Amino acid sequence: MKNRQRIQTCIAGLLLLALAVPDLANSQPVSQPNSVTDSIGRYKAIMATRHQPGVSAHRGNSQLAPENTLATFQEVLRMQVDFIEIDVRTTQDNQLVILHDGSLNRTTTGSGPIKDQTLTTLKTLSAGKGFDNRFQAERIPTLAEVCQLVSRWNASHKTQTNLYVDCKAVAPQPLVETLQTYGLLKNAVFYGSDEALLALKQVAPTARLMPSLDKAEDMPTKISKLKPYAFDLNWAVVNESLIQQIHQQGIKAFSDLLDSFDTPENYQKAAQFHLDVIQTDYVLNVYKSLTQKVH
Image 1 (cartoon, rainbow, N blue to C red):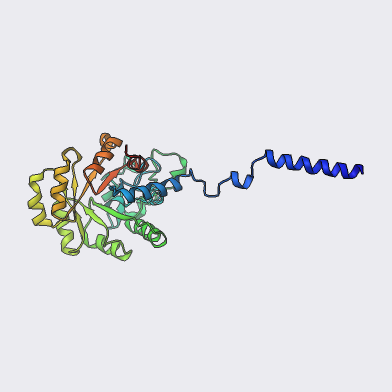
Image 2: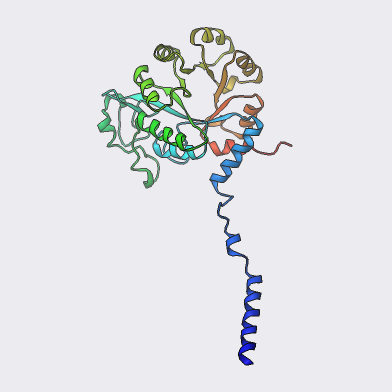
């Protein structure tokens, strides 16, 4: 009898404990809804319903990892950006590499002009200068390495990311051939001087050219000369009327919202003006701003 009472007492205690303690399985959400990955998914879904501008990650995203490195490109691929902007230069031995500056000094452990160095020498340098030890093994990537990374990502993900190629110092033929090899030529956009874009057009007539446009009055000449896919607009001159004029010509409008222009107020203006692509150093800030509730 005493044993039965002990058993009943134990069962009652266990029942009370079960009521008092939350279900552990339910209290540990498998998908971690507050994670960055899930937040990005929600941001992108909301933006798609509002016809918001696309987003280009300027040199990748130098806030999370060193600019123009495979590490930073991997980060912004996870952010599902529409474009990754890369700066293409040529080494002494005619290899195509990704670096913004003509000099190695600012972002690498090397010094002097990149055009005076071979790829072998460049690969001995760290491209993680100014970042913590996690990035000291980062190297200046080749264009082919970046293309391989993006191509593999696109092959296994529904959201596609394209390249925004800033032609800093590169001949058109090897540039086109490399992007073509990895299936990235068709949807890439190419920024550079009018002369560089004209030379590119001779090699790849259907390439999506994007010359700069600083003044509205230059538009007819550039359209006639280059037949651009898009214009890269100086944000200081951007207004709704200018973008409407561009769209009426069947041309897209991109703009750099960088440095002092990289603000939520300007992201909202870009959306109101129907800008096609915002280029930014703060991808997540753009997403958050463009998905705020409209009051």
